[in-house]
Length: 79
Image (cartoon, rainbow, N blue to C red; front, side, top):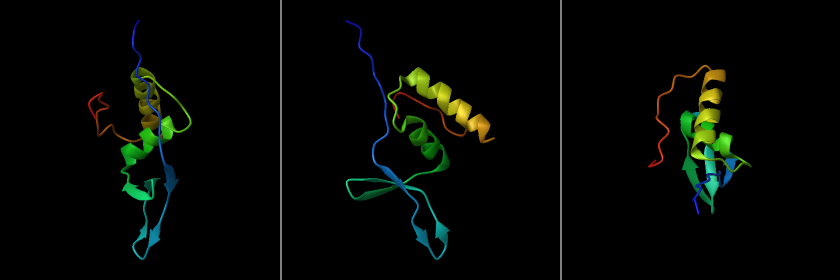
């Protein structure tokens, strides 16, 4: 039987505001995880979805292109 690895997002998105401005975070079990732009794109791609690494890579690159962002980070199975 062939194994399949699927990925999905966990937690929920918040945007706390401080005197310096707001910043994106993912809340998981009452813990705050700050996310950079590429991490937010990946989290958004996976939100409410189960995707293979190939599906995630394709959607991630489409989102980066639509946002006119340069690909700064590789999407790796080991990350």
